[in-house]
Image (cartoon, rainbow, N blue to C red; front, side, top):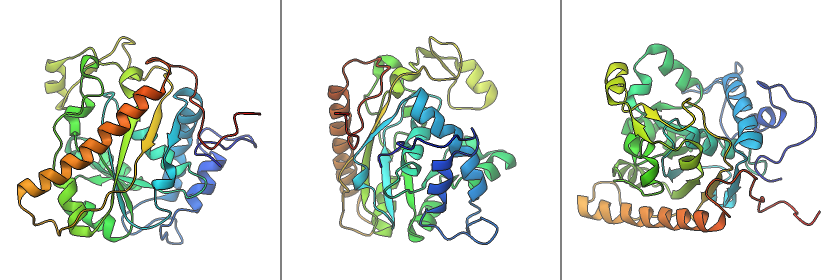
Length: 292
């Protein structure tokens, strides 16, 4: 069944049947209380991903391409573009992985420091599998055969204005040293539609300083919620690189540039495939029979 393709029995907004069944199938060792050794909680995952599944299917109408490139088990590093200001792109990428009925996986992220400053936020994120963005945390997860999702553009990518849509900003290189150190394949990923769902016109800089955040975006809808624009996720062929993470900077940069070029190719494919920028109808799923 295609990602997000479950239909059938009635579901609770916070207890989606497909989400619950797929969480039970994750290749993660949970104890009798539903926790893993990093503090991840099965109950928290179901409660968080159930409303995300609704948004994925019915509001942002996400279609995922290339799910066959996500390994059924074992470590991998998904490297994605960042956009849209409010994190809808990240939420939908993570949701596409959970809703992949053929081989559900949990994407675990490296959270920005400003998101983990309060003890409550730190605990809440850890219950969903997201740890503070330190290299050693990423290494712990990959060495435990997890699927880690990173956004090498960082906050600068998330905060890009609509006039700069789909233009990748400077990449950090830490993800490549992490991949080399842990012998992990890199899976390029492109999210299409986030720039239109929350088209940032400008940032309120004084308010960002007041709340101690990287930026406070303003979009035409004037609320921190995306427009119902149909979105797509594209996963590319896994990329393998030689090395152990101690390579000179110029070698690391060459590897990073290869990943960036692959992501730019996926973005170009995604932009060319959609009939218009602000599309509101779901793009056909590649695994669904459209003849019926």
